[in-house]
Amino acid sequence: MKLKQLSVFLENKPGALSEPCRLLAKAGISIQTFSLADTREFGILRLVVEDSDKARRLLQRNGFAVKVTKVVVLEVPDRPGGLAAILDALDGTGINVKYAYGFTVRRENKGVLVFCFDDPDAAIRVLQKQGINVEGGAGLLKRSKS
Image 1: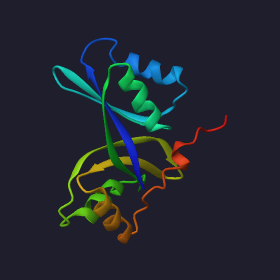
Image 2: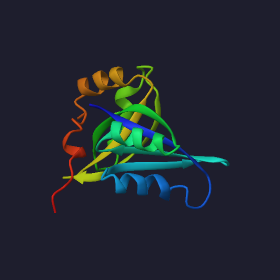
Image 3: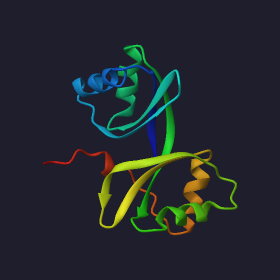
């Protein structure tokens, strides 16, 4: 399944990461997973959250530049070669992996990864034909009751 990921552009300076995280926390929006990348002048905070539309509006109202991207969540066997099997399934298809990062859940000997593909629909079709579990997403975005 495709999920909406928010890319938030931040200044590369101390404290810049705190502000969007505090805004989301105050609004009751849970961050399910994130990735932070940097360049010399700015950072890109990539987020998967419970309510991406509400989070996008909130961040934009508070002056953040936000881009919405569709990403694909895959279950990956937690063993040597688990990631390689996914990449092997894509070999020769012309589908490019733009970037990927880990999800903050782990299941019975499986990890969960977030992928950004240049053609997510084609990637899903190819991966499902190879028996790779493309996550439904809904269960991943529910808060655990503890």
